[in-house]
Image (cartoon, rainbow, N blue to C red):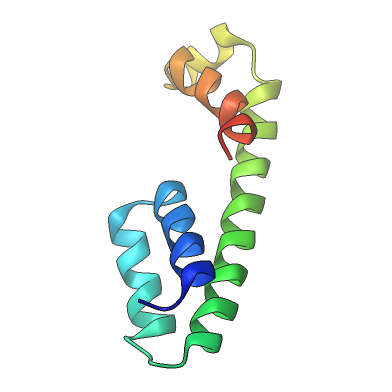
Length: 89
């Protein structure tokens, strides 16, 4: 719809955030704009922000021993997933 680059970037964004978060960002930043250059620029910026957030969370989770993650209420599987995020992107 917005061109190959923007569409692919938006798909990546959708994998890194909740549907609600995606919809709020879309309504706030894109709002069905017809300007393909604007959509590409804003989607690239949002993707970079989400990747930084995922990296920060991954680093935080990676420092937690599995037994400590349980005491904080996190399932060990979440810690393992956080450690794998960079491999999935």
